[in-house]
Length: 614
Image 1 (cartoon, rainbow, N blue to C red):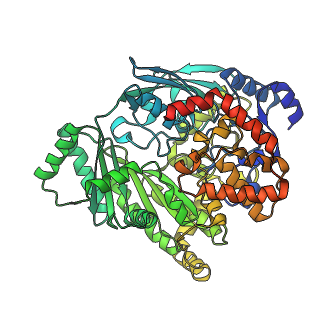
Image 2 (cartoon, one colour; image 1 turned 135 degrees about the horizontal axis):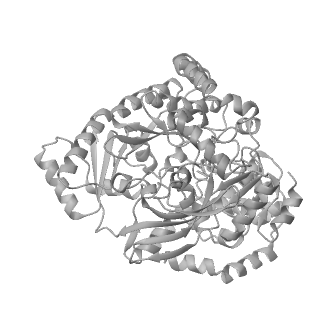
Image 3 (cartoon, one colour; image 1 turned 45 degrees about the vertical axis):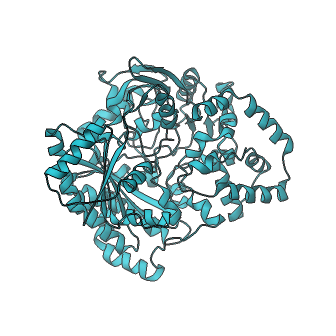
């Protein structure tokens, strides 16, 4: 790529081009062995561009289109299936700093935001006006544009539907640099939802809000197994509809997931059993539900209210179990409720073959479908990890055989495209891709590009990939047990030391949303996420530059990252150790620290964040 020519063409648009900083943009929260990603794809971008406004995004896209340079849009990178990982290098368009809440309309109950806006920021601002989000992801620090592009199902989806139903309008920029404002009534609107930035980049969105609920009324019930829990759920959904009361959220956790929560808490407040969480937003609905449970004489054990409240309040920290790992892998599918229990039984059996404990976290989406996240702990530092990674695809294919579809494609689910879209729909998408992105610059190498090349094109060809995974499924009882016999079962951690803390980082991006250094510098190397990556480099004995070392000192030690950390890492202790190590080798950059503190003090965005969170 003609990088210097590109930089010149971009003019004064901010870009990142140092190798250490670009490396951060070569992965998401997934832990794929580097040898695999580097063999199959060109994952390191040649340049990272951070636009300040829509005009700069348009200019970047038009420049890339003229020069035939690949562009990969990126938000907080909090999804783990490779949607934001470059397949062919080029430009990463970093929309994470593009995060303003532009307008809150209390009359229409809508909010207009830039694509990089965090769900948590929107909710804080809305609540000050008596409004709140209708539905939101399990990480409130992911971006609006990112969730539109990757799915839109999670908390409160049972009552309010997927995110696509809450979009009033959105502005997108196509692969030719054309700006289009679309509403759900527009014929082309669906092409830009859940298609992972392959047809256009979402840059601005207007969303529906709702009135603040009276309160939160969660209930937690215990069942002897998943089959009983799902059967109760199906009956309850039908009865609740006729009884005119509807919960916001219905969430199922299996006994393994509940057991891990107890272990993290170092307390046994949860019964190690299949648990069903049902949450209402009004006292009237809650009263109807209590009456329903009494009249229907469902002999189901209910946990104390404080236990249900705790689980509901922890809904945004789903990756906390990673500290028991230190690595967490996951499969996500949308499956018919009638097949869900059978899948879970098969998933746990497959996990036992490979010496891991599969945990289940499931959200009921409607009367017929459930979103199931099957997770398991392992250790990316060990050789057995190369056997653990294929288990993700094995679980996904097992669910597909029971009528499920993958929750998104990205890079790693690309071979399951036939289970998500019909052949007719795929042809339709490819025709539309050629229309709005004729030079194939947006997210090339992904599902609707004009053919992936080389080893990746062969491996992720659906026929080849599914055949290989089917062989692994059939041979799992033998291969899995042999691997476990020679390499052992995956042991859970009792505590973390510094090296394990760097691996236990979820790379979720929560820290970016609250970090003063990131607001001022727009540099991820100054954030907790970046500093943990730097610590890993030091531990591994890799080269660290003076610039990387200096960036680690641009920190206010405000503890915001520690307070919001998904895995509850003791980050302040880690920063003290890191700074001590760097100072002994590179010295302390006092001048840069002073300049940084002045920039923070002068930053309008910083003081707005302080006011917003106060």
